Length: 250
Image 1 (tube, rainbow, N blue to C red):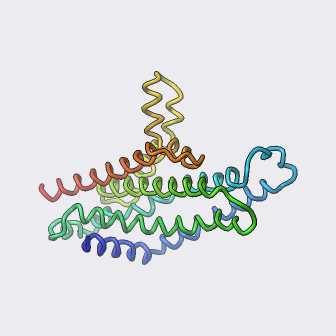
Image 2 (cartoon, rainbow, N blue to C red):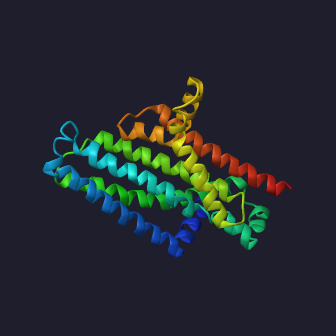
Image 3 (tube, helix red, strand yellow):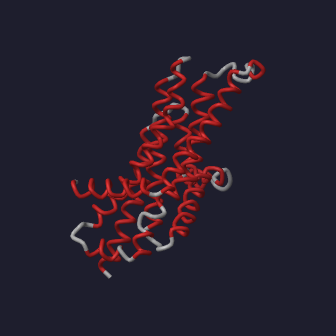
């Protein structure tokens, strides 16, 4: 555990040394602040009162903001994870890592926790926006909690997928594009699932990252949704370990 913690701390420090990490922080906060003000302004506009008569501030403002946050995180996570292993390959230091006494499992988990720690710091800043509404109104705290847990699980899955793709290539740009491609396909699977046989629709709907996230945004805390995200994260972490372990052997 000490080794994993050390690797995670090193990875987190390496992220913050890069200007890209700070730029992503600023861009995400700027974009979400704009959307937050736009959604809030629309909600309090008397002309739109009839449209939101049956909905509260949590359903409109909070859920709307966190929906957009999920999309933005899908776009920026590939940039966070693209250097994880591809940079090690490009510099040649991957050979030193693979020949070191550190196990592959410790290496992958350490890098994963480092990336996730960075993303969780970003999520903490995102969460401050809906929480700021408590100064002027009441929120459905249980729905807010479920939505934030959904965003944490979603982001964890994004990170695991990104690290796996980064372990496959020495080109950071290829890793970023590959990660985005996989995330995008998993995001829209439920839309494709509207056609075909019932079994086909059920499989694609269940495999969609967006579908499970929507359940949590609606305040429906179902263990099946939590298990789904844990399975996705675990699967891609295991695939990363398997990929690097094979490379160490051969």
